[in-house]
Amino acid sequence: MSVLKALEGTQEAEILAGMEAAYRRIEEKQRAWKESGAPLCIDGCGACCEGFEPDVLPGEALYLAAWLIDNEPERARQIADGSYEAPAGRTEGTCIFFDPAHPWHCTTYGGRCLICRLFGYSGDYGRDGRKRFRPCRFYPAAKLQAYGMEHRQYSEDELQQSHGAVPPAMADCVQQVLSLTPGSSGETAALHEALPGAIRRLQWILRWTDNAGPQSA
Figure 1 (cartoon, rainbow, N blue to C red):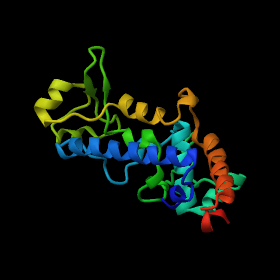
Figure 2 (cartoon, one colour; figure 1 turned 135 degrees about the horizontal axis):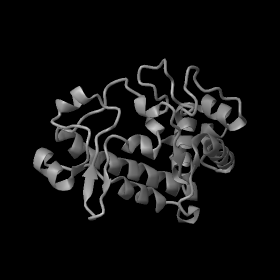
Figure 3 (cartoon, rainbow, N blue to C red; figure 1 turned 60 degrees about the vertical axis):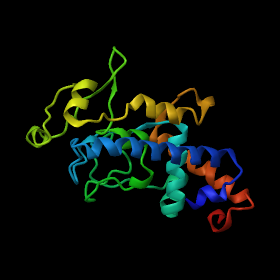
């Protein structure tokens, strides 16, 4: 992203580069699971977003802020100054970037937060320390059967036997992001609360950096 280049040499650039690397690793780990015959998200579903707003780590907020400045500077400005109006028709408590009228619903997909990348394609660890996986609760049972699965928890052994792969564990992916901002102690904030400050922080740095170019305007 061009913001990353403009911020070269700053702590923020290091965090953003680390976030990009972490998100790439998630995609790589999920690829084998998706290609194994795992249930894929249904086009245009969006059920997991209804009534949900992510709580984000500082690195997530900073990454989405940079993505907005890069791709939608006007919307970034509105969020920073408090004039942004979220899409109409959302249920209470739903993410400010969810648009019921948009065919894909998420309007910041390229900059989406960690949980949005992990949900549906990640598992966790059981008490035995081994990975396990439960399909998305919103997935229609009939469609799930087409993948040879049902709504229950699957052990690592079952997944290896049926699919020859296991999804990444959510805790491992979160730990990668936590390591980028050790001083934050894992503290999170609601997306709509964390994002304006993250945008203003980047905007201020971009105004003063010698490499800011057109983004500093």
